[in-house]
Length: 307
Figure (cartoon, one colour):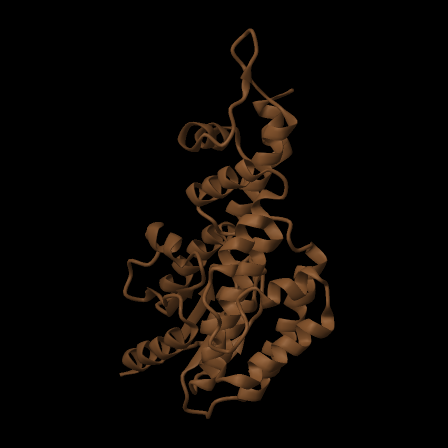
């Protein structure tokens, strides 16, 4: 049996959060010592670890608790079965196959299948349609499959590397915009490393005719400010792919706005930046969750600022 302090250390969740999960969602019911202290079993810790993995991958605590509860009722390998059932219920992709394809290839750690699938998808429709209708949703499914144990870290990395190679090639193929085109700096704030979404956007923006300077991942605030001062871009675009990316994104938004430069924010957790009050200034805007729409919106924003 383990105390709540020890469980907090083992699971990587603050004590206050563990208490809130128990109170609000009833994810576990720890025993009580004679002195009234919570005591957790190994099974409780396993449940809390599964919930933490889902929350870390982007699920809300309420959704994660419901998934854990359903999984526990089913017994062994609970969340894997749950997620597979959800994916099988999804309608077929307009490109053919189902949304489970890439997850299955990652679970099998089959590099040939991964490459073949990506090649087929990239060749089938426009880049923008591919990103919005298939690739980004598929990567979200892959992240969930990793969190639930259906896909190993190696399988997830194998897919990410293959996608990265194709996005890099697409970015280069889009070419540099003409000299009079709007110029945009894009990348990720300090500590942020999940770049497939922002690289997808950078490619779509280049294809829109915007001059994109891609600064990559995990760029410290001081270096962002230096780049803005040196390049004097029409706008800065960043993404907030993970909950842990919100705080550095908020800091960067405020720094860029202080320099009177437009900054636009995308990514799965951009709404948290809105909630933090960092996007109240006219120079700080959210781009929404469609890559193609975001690229078009950015063009309109930049051109309106220019005029």
